[in-house]
Image 1: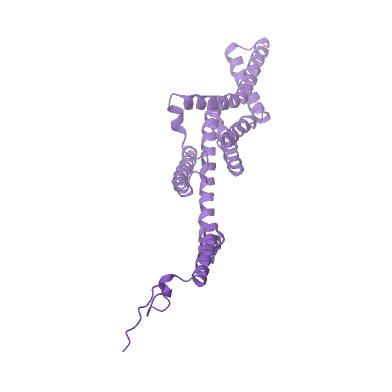
Image 2 (image 1 turned 45 degrees about the vertical axis):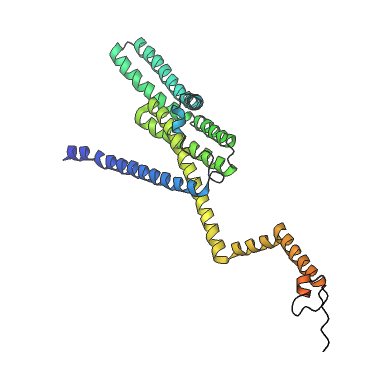
Length: 279
């Protein structure tokens, strides 16, 4: 019974992870659809400058590929710094422990086994001491500068940098717990991309909600129509048209036309009326 309960214990954890990943993929897809529609409604001027899917730019075998390679290579290098520190500390602890155990008279196999356990403990201590913030911070700064380069707003810079920072950090921690050094590097890269995408999609959706709310408010209060009327009255064309109409009316009053003066029975016309025959 004890063995069966131990064997059945990992199943809920596996199911929970499956549910979490499924929920994340579903939410990410819904955010993608919502952000796509939001960018279509907002237009290029209001929408995020870097919110469009740029993965295809990395495959154009030109400047886009070069830029993408430099960007991802720089992030990978900074994320690799911490992993290198941990790995170097582990190897140094292993070598020192192995030499000490062999000098104490232990066999090679036994000494290697104990040295490996000591090296694993040293690596855990180094992981706790080594800061994970340098790589995520570099990735966040890089993405923020990219938004500024394309002319994005300060809000877009803040949201994308925050998303990249959180995604890189959490992805690195999750990957390291699963696959060690390789998992840390892979998780940092994937987390950086996912965090920035989620932040930009959220930014576009928030901007679209603000725009819709403003339009609904103007429609309900009628401020939009009043503003249009006031702008039309204050426009130069409206003023010029009123001046033209007033001047035309004044000319008509002061100088009536010949047609109007000569209409009716013919009195006041320039033509002479022939005298009537005397009876």
